[in-house]
Image 1 (tube, rainbow, N blue to C red):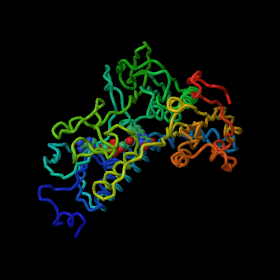
Image 2 (image 1 turned 180 degrees about the horizontal axis):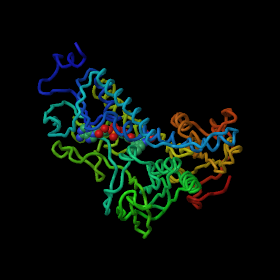
Image 3 (image 1 turned 135 degrees about the vertical axis):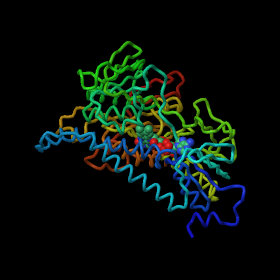
Image 4 (image 1 turned 90 degrees about the horizontal axis):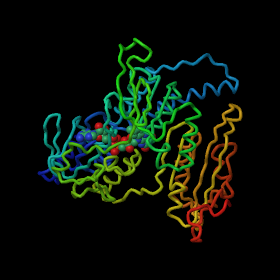
Length: 491
Ligand SMILES: Cc1cc2nc3c(=O)[nH]c(=O)nc-3n(C[C@H](O)[C@H](O)[C@H](O)COP(=O)(O)OP(=O)(O)OC[C@H]3O[C@@H](n4cnc5c(N)ncnc54)[C@H](O)[C@@H]3O)c2cc1C
């Protein structure tokens, strides 16, 4: 007898429910929750309206990282010559990259399918909406499923502010499948998704302009890192237009293939700027997928941003309905969605309740060089602590001595003066994502700066810079009320 058949015939089931758990959305959070709940003996059904794997696998982290890998070869080819390699002129073929990406995400999608099947989860390919607090309707065939518990894991979608001609733009959903490579790319927005695409398309050969409403890129990141990235992108020929935003998109007149700019898009900005693009990527942030989901019929409350409001156990205001991942708009990252799904399933179906710890969530931006960050930024630390030491080093990696690369890398550690505990680490350097993953263990475990200083360096590496820092670059001290929030002295 199959696992699901055994579960279906279990005598303890309440007849009024078809399933113990209905999961809406087969992305990072939903898939983990469904598998773990099923492993705890629950009868689980999961509905996915598009492709199993969700944003991360199909049109987010995974395809993006594959494109980032592709983009980094351009630097590598240049550097190789400095190390004695003689190569013929490399040629980049966009359709080959898209095809390689498609093969990998199709393989992963299949793996997720067999994983769910193997765990005894019934997967339904359909959009699902709520009819009431215990009933889910499958739009594909109109079926109604009664569920004791419902998990909403519908993720988020690109946010699109209204302006004329917006339909001519593409979002991150479409950028992975472009038929032709965009020679001229305009990007609206300067968050991490915008910056990652700006960097990778520029490295692949696009002429990239970023139109950014604010005065710098990557709002929310440490100021030194923001400056370092903006400087690096400018050096690489990426044009950053600050204090401006896209007002209108218009298709250029003329037959495709006719003139130089035929078929292209005219971009007009609020400040009167005029640009011409092959593609306009709209990366203004993401909004929770809660529209037309039947939340009102079930009585589930949302916040002003449309996100489902949940407590520390991912529970909504309706006691049998939970929500995990981007749909609750807290930390919109794959590992967070996965952990929330896992905690929910263990707590509700596994008799072992636990909550996700959101302190010190590490994150990366896959620019080149990369950003790795964990904990508080310098400004956050200075607002929350009385006295803060900032250790900062700018350096060039050994490889740059041969390649002639002049770009400064940055390592920054923010420390609470009173306890010597590390509050935050911010890196702009090669492999920053890998470094920050490991450093987050130390920060989460309450490591002090003294702990870091006592560790032996691994030489020659980029990471050794972090244990080589011996004196703070600057101290901000508010313990003396006469000097609030300004550097007391360069220590
Ligand atoms: C371009 C891009 C790059 C990213 N890069 C990173 C990264 O490097 N690292 C990182 O940690 N995070 C990254 N993210 C964020 C990450 O993808 C999300 O945080 C993560 O996928 C959220 O998981 P989730 O389960 O909440 O939602 P999702 O993975 O979005 O899954 C939701 C699923 O629900 C389905 N669905 C929606 N409504 C319904 C319905 N009514 N019925 C049935 N199915 C429905 C959707 O089709 C989707 O498959 C990136 C995102 C983007 C867009």
